[in-house]
Image (cartoon, rainbow, N blue to C red):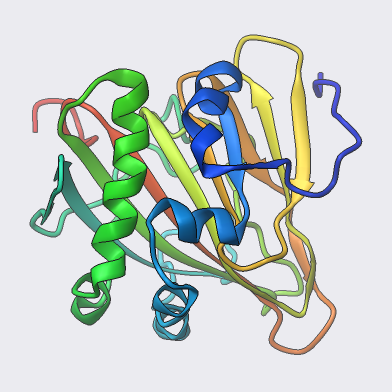
Length: 251
């Protein structure tokens, strides 16, 4: 049964200073673009300079629903305090328990471009979000996976979460809207993993950010449809996990 929803369709954004408390109490929290700029901190232009790299994402060759609507790049990092270290490139892997569609499959995506990772704002972003994770679960190294996604409407419909409502099998997830062009739909839905409550809203402004406690909530985004030629939705999804990256047992 779908949990009851609130009527609020705009993101319920909070001030950056309230992020940790909101995430601790509700399991999810949203920041406006201005809130994200303040959290890092950075000038808007620093993040906006990343946007063009979403035009150079290779197709996702692993979609098991037969679609051709997703492009992506992937990179891994270890964040410990102010230190951000890129890990050797590795496959993205999730257990079937968390991803019924693509779980159990080693998926090798092209890496995030080196010139993007080298930008100071990239490390600023990972450090700021990791500090939030440590404030809730204790200071420790965070094993971070960053995914650049473009969901397009080449097939007439694009599915941001083809696996449906899900958890990622990590500690925290950040979903950051990078751009949204010529589409309708793409509503974000967050449900309690062990309760009846939920919330839904649509992120429309680039750099709106949703932070999730992956142990406590389930999330999904509804399909998008074109309202103009070339319609697409770009996101940066960053996951944070204690005690190592996910991988097949024994590796």
